[in-house]
Length: 180
Picture (cartoon, rainbow, N blue to C red):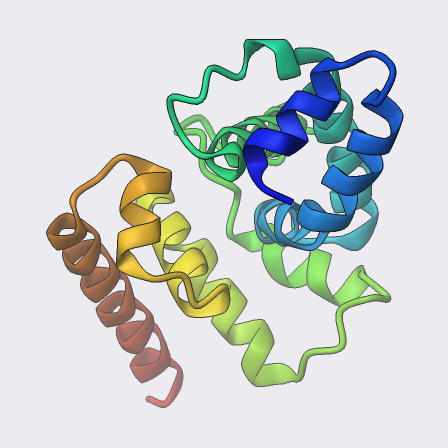
């Protein structure tokens, strides 16, 4: 089903419930993944995901086809996740997630089954500036193409490649420091 058909169903009161189920089926994993990378724990990601879906459902009439449906929902999910962290005082004055919380959250999360190397990678990613973190997560973990990233974030492919390059260099430097 196309995004246009999906939006049409969501706007039609008679087919709204069916449209919402289809929306969940089509986008649940991708949106959850975006949220989880920001809030880190399953419990928090689940709460934020529910709030995101409520916002999407109640504001679908404001979707103006100026971007793809996923791009619009991605922005809602990201804003919800960051708002959640601000309410929980898990972000610093600069709006960044406090990196020292990363390891604690991952170790406390029963759904995180990563090894020590994965914990260190997540700690390294947490230290990145927000734009680099966002681009790195979408490119590395979600394997998103630069063309899709460009549409999603409204940034040129060249700028995204540079951002990703700088992020990977910082992560490499982090691991170099660990090995000293």
